[in-house]
Length: 260
Image (cartoon, rainbow, N blue to C red; front, side, top):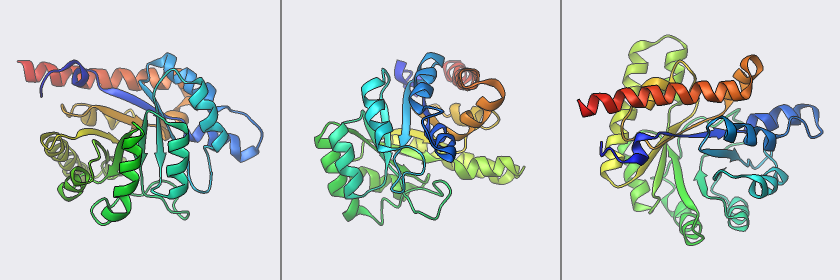
């Protein structure tokens, strides 16, 4: 832990995809994900994440157009490694592009990108994004092999998949949750030593975020589905503020432990 201001403040990226999912279930323009992005900014988010899928099941091309014109926060565009998505990213020039695995059959992203197995396909896409001054991240499993692949691909950022940890917590399997948390902690340490900026996300909730936020070398968490669901009960602003508070508390405890 270096104790730099960047690491003291754990960034929160709010994913607004599922505001668009609700809109698309009925058609029309409401609820508007751009309004959700503005609420997130006011509630303490550090960035906005949106995944433009091949099948456009939630976020649309028009949403990306409007986000680029309306946002005061950085936009993190989640995208598959396809020529279509590369062209869209290059045209809009978001702050960041996170390359994720994608299949039409999945309900949500089911695991990390195989950066090692897909090296030759990913390399030219990453190169073009970087040449356009778009920060590139790879959504991967907490696996040293995938971290090494990210370095070899010149991707400066990785986002570690926390889904298996969250699922183990949800079903009450403490042993599996502990093992996944160890994997995430070790991968963060290894990735940091390799010179990567390490983020994490997928499936995080109020109950699961604390141990992840306490990992000292993490720079950013990206959280979406849970926050949009929780907004039904306590409002989007309240959900984001509570998540922000839980993250800050966990990070403060980590800083206090390391400075003692």
